[in-house]
Length: 510
Image (cartoon, rainbow, N blue to C red):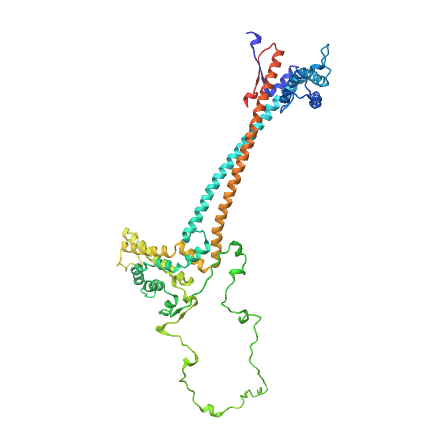
């Protein structure tokens, strides 16, 4: 095989070591290269306006091979200064010719070109590539975050809609809608116990077990009278007049909760002035008139009543007095009823005290029926030989299951979420503030999520633009590095009788 046909393969990472080991370039060239770079910096300041020079010098690291091209261009622009001996009088030409000679001295140009090639392939190009990949990744992450926020926004809107649905409102005008909904509470209460008469058999079954007719009094009362007042439950008669308690729906935001004693959170004592409070420090002194102790004998303890007429003591008291003449009205008693006010004015299902007692009775009845079903099931399987309710054989498992189903249905209606929310709204001003704040915060979170999504979309677009702006720079550097690699391969090939030189791991590997 001919020696000229054997290629020279050089790994790019070891190119400088290869050149030094072949004594093509000196081991240390930093000082020479620094001096040459200073000369190039000074020479560039005085350049003719030539289109090829502008393209050549724009965005490129000027090396030896660029200097050769500059000299060729100056031969055209500075040809008027050429003498008959072939020399140029132009200082520009002299400067660049001197730079070329400095490069060619000890082949410094080849050392610099190899350093530049290795730096571009090892650092510059991979750095730009990683930067573009990082920008691309950040852009994708921003878009993914936008999608996640869209899901979060959907969840928040769904939760807001679900809470509004529980309350039976649209959520557009909270104060107005909730106030209107609270007026429907009596109808909601009535609807929840519409089928309470279905519990009669279960109540009788429980009474048969307890042998006490006083058990579950509220269930029996509501079965007979519906959602009547506490007054009627206590006194067994309907009131003549009901003094309904007024309430104010406090729909302040969460900030209002921090104001413990201001605004709508103050308790209305119905016109009772603080001066009449027996515990007030500013109680006005009671005026007993002009009391004189002159006629009181403190030694004997006798009180001087002044002059009295003995004739009046002998007269009888006349009790036959018409009260109408004095405007005195006596309220009816007994079956005629009376005035229901305060706690007694509430209905059973609206009373904070008796509502809980009624629900407790329902759960008590439910527990009794579940235990009975458990005993009946175990008895059928032969796993339960002893039963506290063994004597109650009037109902089988199927009928008890039906009773339990009726009880659970009433419990579900009485304790459903809408009723619970509205009940708490009416009786707890703080709960109203918390609920309103919860609804408002969900909408605020939706708005914040939308704003964040827009910011992330803008950020993603900016990152994508930065990546696109780096792409031309990367392509240009790849092209310049590829040209530089070819120039180095060609220069080394000339030194070895034009043998093929391959720089392995070069720009094509990026």
